Image (cartoon, rainbow, N blue to C red; front, side, top):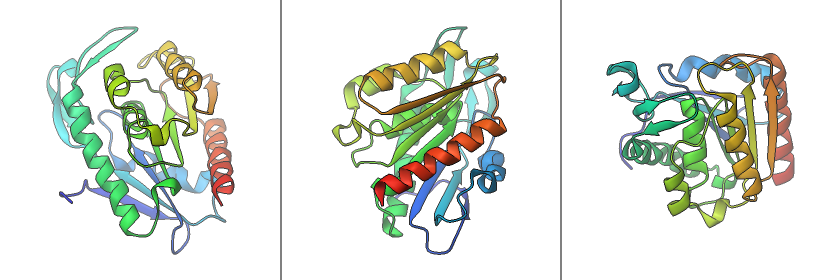
Length: 225
């Protein structure tokens, strides 16, 4: 296994039986969502949360400024993004290495959930829908599908029906609501049981959304036990 991404880990109870690998948004880091863990209401479940830090790279759409990013965004407008698919592939491998580490620590892939916000959510879609082994679910927050060709060419039969929780703020000025809604509709019509939520908020998360995520996680864990 190649060198793993640096990450923050939090365990809700000893001897975790589940893992959630949660990717942050553009320019943030793994600390971004650490604080929501106690708000999810998973006290009775043994879960390891893994919050990896994306690599530092120059981002074209931000004038080449170097920041933490899962892939370069070459161009963006109000309805689309042009991205570096090679960067997605590279960090897909890095996230898959984190999945493999959880497997080695005794958590099978079918008990691993990929989650992400914004660019991290785009990675959750890209990794989760193409991963060769069945996963427990995908959480995609305020995000979009960054590379349709990647999914068209590499969608995994093992994850053809992986459940998805998708949510978006209707006042989002960064990732247009229409992009998030279109992504959720696409995976839903493609056969994935999809739970879609919208909230009156900008490019962020809210308490109502966190509660809904916690309920969805508990339902996934109950369904697999």
